[in-house]
Each structure stands twice: as C-alpha cells, then as structure tokens.
Length: 111
Length: 113
Image 1: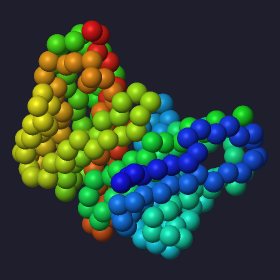
Image 2 (image 1 turned 45 degrees about the horizontal axis):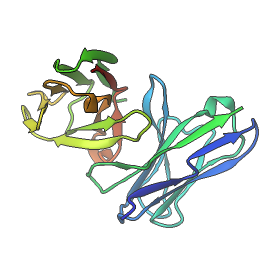
Image 3 (image 1 turned 45 degrees about the vertical axis):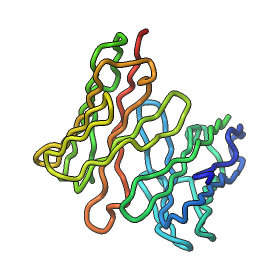
C-alpha cells in the first residue's frame, strides 16, 4: 500500500496563476484533510471532507477550494495564487476516530 | 474555539540528555495524540492516550495524559540524534467533530552529538 500520496512534490507559481494539488489514499478512509504548514505556525486546517462528495471549511479556507469526487482523492485548488500562499501543504486521511496519516507534502512557492 | 498550546517552542540538548515537551488544551479532551515530524518530512503518528492519568511508554519515550484530560507530556530519556524533529500534540474537537484535530505548534528538538 502506498498510503497517502501527493502530487506535485514541488511547484513554483507566479502571482495570479492557478493550480491544483492532488491527494490520493488507498486505505479506504472516509475522512480527508488539507493542512498548510508555515514556520512557527504549526499545522493549520484548510478544508476537510467527511466522505465522498462532501467538503467543509477548516481554520484557514480563504483563497482555496476543494473537491472530493472520489473517495480516494481529495483535490485542493488555488484559483489565483498569492505570495501569502507560499507554504508546505499536507494532505491527511483518517477513519472516524482514528489517527491521521499524512502524505509527503507539496512545497509551493508563489512569486 | 479549542486551543492547544505547546512549550517549549525549541529545545536544544546534548546527546544523552533528557527532553520533555508539554501540551495544554483550553478544553477537556477525549483523547490526545502525539506526532513526530523529521526535518523535511511529514508528521507521523506516535501514540494516542485516552484515559485520565494514562502513561504509555515506547522504548525511551514516555507519554502522559493529565488527570483532568487537559494536558499531556512527552519525555525522552537519553536523547539520541535520531530523536531530532518536531513533536506535535493534537486534540480532537468536541461532540460530533472529534475526527478533526487541533494541533499544537510543536516543539523542535535538536540534538548535539
């Protein structure tokens, strides 16, 4: 099992460009999450999903959109990237009350 | 909303010294989880504590959950260079949202060989 995978691993964008980050899990988990990690800020929840076809806002959702069309995939979109969105993005998945399994992360630089 | 605070933010030790990080929640927790993130890596689950006053050990690591279920600690005995990384505690939300975790900001441990 691959666990949780993320693509791409690294990306450089110019301000105003758009992109989609892909997260895939093969553990049949219902719950999936997108976090961003910035120095000194820990992990902050952007959006999450409690099942296929559902999404909900987390702590810092502005500037991001998500979709969960398939149970195993959770997409994070940036419609118009801003330098403040430079960060490391982690996807995670879990069962209802279980531990969270994280992907390797995507490092995004917005110039 | 729920807040989870960790101290210290950074800790530098000599190899062989002990290390402790503390976690405090603004609300009572149903459980607390600990994660480790190596430099350049992703968070990896270490352990979950559920019972009031619970103590669990993993080799040189000792985890405690407070009696009031609002605080927790992680103690490492005789640190090694392999212990380097950031240690996060995380508590679930209350009621029906206990699948969502609130993470502390973490304690970065560096070890001088």
